[in-house]
Amino acid sequence: MKFAIVSKGDERSNKIKATMKQYLTDFDLEYNEDDPGLVISVGGDGTFLEAFHRYVHCIDSTAFIGVHTGHLGFYADWVPDEVEKLIIEIAKTPFQIVEYPLLEVIIRGKNGGKEDRFLALNEATIKTTEGSVVFDVEIKGDHFETFRGDGLCISTPSGSTAYNKALGGGIIHPSLEAIQLTEMASINNRVFRTIGSPLILPKHHTCLLKPVVDRSFLITIDHFTQNYTHVKSIQCRVAKERVRFARFRPFPFWDRVRDSFVADDDKEF
Ligand code: NAP
Ligand code: MN
Image (cartoon, rainbow, N blue to C red; front, side):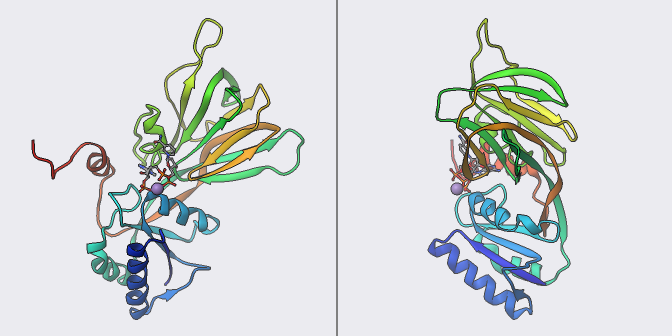
């Protein structure tokens, strides 16, 4: 099997990368950054997002695994002390695969031409530096509301613990094929009205955002931001593609959520 390693770039992560590369090569696995069947991310969730986007063009044939060198990660769940154990597990392939849903975003311009299509592992957000965004929000082809405010966030289930959570969105188990739309400071008064609650859309329920007021939009896809002008529409739905994780032991999603946000077992009260 071919594998590649994406490191956060700090000394500790680079050292773990070097060790894993050496040992896995000793086990007759081939290090190949062009066409890896397994991508190992060493760093944090941010590093995992980077690894995902680096290999997004071949996600059908690539599985991901994360080793975290910082605090507990949502995508990176192996700690450096376990690296040797992980190496042996990887060498014993085939491994079990767990799949999570992704978000598909299609951005279309006013003047026709090429559309941009992205897959997000966490979320897409649409903001502006020019005051408020004003969008007509369509769900499944029907007008739902006109949104005015700082922006909107559309997240995946595995991204629901990231930006979405900070916006008051719900945490969605990644076995549910859904996307979540959360508001950023919507303007609500007698003139302007939005639903106010996060919306959870199932597969095939496309959400279309059509700018009412033309702005220069800041559109984020996970960790990267791009500037768009003359946007006709931004279409969001559950992608047909899925991200594949190599799983060597169970680590239930709710345990991850508890360990990250609730339990602090080291603390004494
Ligand atoms: P960052 O500013 O380092 O990320 C912010 C934090 O989100 C980091 O602690 C990161 O973990 C964590 N994170 C990333 N994905 C997560 C997930 N699925 N569940 C729980 N926590 C998660 O930037 P970054 O590392 O490049 O990550 C980009 C992400 O930052 C975006 O996709 C967005 O979700 C998030 N973000 C959050 C806010 C907010 O909460 N107000 C604002 C902007 C962006 P690591 O430290 O392990 O990287
Ligand atoms: Mn980060």
